[in-house]
Image (cartoon, rainbow, N blue to C red; front, side, top):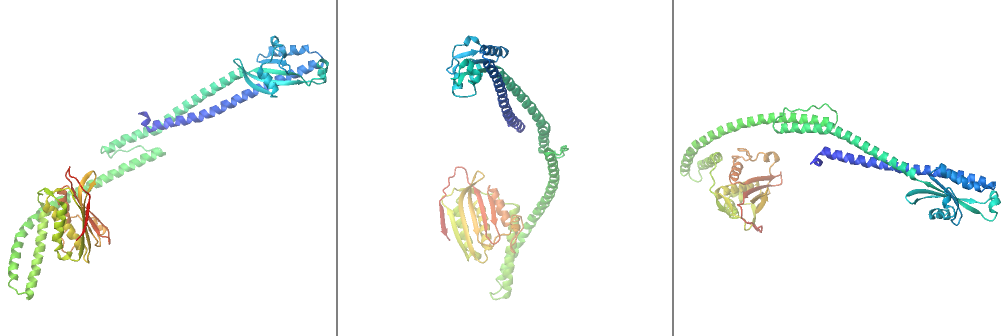
Length: 499
């Protein structure tokens, strides 16, 4: 829809603000012009009334009261908007520019104006707006000849001035201001629309088209950023961004090329290492057997027996390295079946508890009961658990606490059984943590650097994950996630027991 366009919303908002501002300004001027026209009309009526009053006093001073009627009629004929009369304080019309109303009662509005001692008022007479003015004619020496000396007010001079002409002029003024306002708003709206389309919408549309080309992979796109306004700054930023993307893509392609070369080299080395491992494995078995036979020929206190035993230990270490290398190169296909992870944890802990390094470790199991069965190869997952738990124990050389937790959890919309192995050892430095899954990288003097890479490889075969969190001097937490089959139920009751 058009209102979804930013430019359209800006134009509509601008027109609304302009219309409101100019409309208020025009209304203010219309009201001021109306007040001015009414003031001019009132001053004209007051001047006319004052002139007639002076003429009346002049005629009355010479005792010629008949001239008063003639004066009123003459003024009424010369000014079609003026209706003059003189009425008695009790409301009877004595003289009038319209002789036919002499002897009748003046209208209530004029009489009320006199009684309330107001100078003027605006009221409606029929369909006509009228400015009514009254002025008492007070008796003085000039009036004694006709009216005697007994009355203070001998009559009321009354003017009804038609406002038709004034209202017509007010209407014309209002129409003029209205049309002017509409014209100004239309011109300003067209101007704003043109400016926004020419200097904002068109560059933005061009930029969107260029971005689409960049999204499609064309990083040679550039924009003509000649203007020095905000749009020009945006265009120059766009050009800089695309240029940087081009550089980054080139560097990334070079990096991928180097990685592919490295992967090819590693694959070749892996194949060669696997072949060498096969060649080494059988002779090692023979050497181990021969050394074992030789050791039986030496007595317990013979120093040569200790040397032979050390040789056997080194042969075992070499055999483990060869086995790890073969397993990492060709991991076995998992034989899947439903298994209880809690039983697997307990069995693994039992085996590890026999390890010499586990003697001074306090072990705590926090296992959630009734966890769903997981679809796994028990031997492979037990190998993972054994490796992770043994690493935790070996990290606590001076003793410590080993905590193993199991529960069910959800991550990214998927359900997992989670095993957490927590130790209170010295932790892993950040720089070592980044390389912890790199094959052959190890900080142990007796390690092969393949334990954790093999663990991750086995878990990935099961659709699982392994995560490690650690800080120096703050212990390490290893989290193992194994996916739960659909339809399995979970009970989050926690079993906490010391071991």
